[in-house]
Image (tube, rainbow, N blue to C red; front, side, top):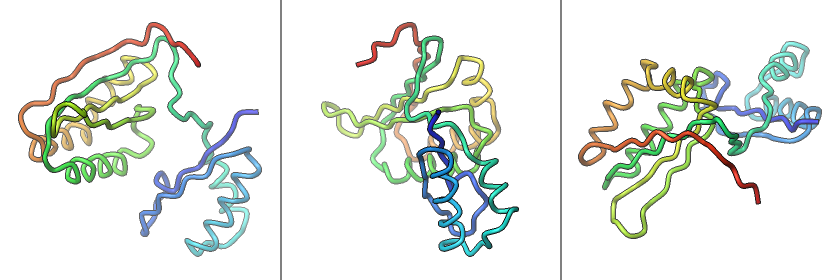
Length: 164
């Protein structure tokens, strides 16, 4: 049976909760109910359970397959906190509309203030839909204010995976 996950970041919330729960479906549902009741003040009723069950997703931690698409973005920044804040805002505003599956930020050990971001998508078409989304367009323009110079992009098709 596929592991399930539920993420508070995808739910409407005044507290901007970032809790994510993963496990077998029944375990995740029970923990999510407990969390919703104790932290968010919801009543444990059928409506809550149905809503949480509908929000369950298959766990895909850094899942990638042949035919997927990865975008590599290199940028320079002295204000990494500003970059992170815009990334969090993008994720929050995109919610379930994003087609990105995961994002990894890395720092180049050999070049100060140089960062690489890997963004994975199921395929190239999904990446293009994500890039054309108005939220992505707006955040990309604002990202230029906290980075130095132009970011460079590499579009990469996944042609082979070696699982270890």
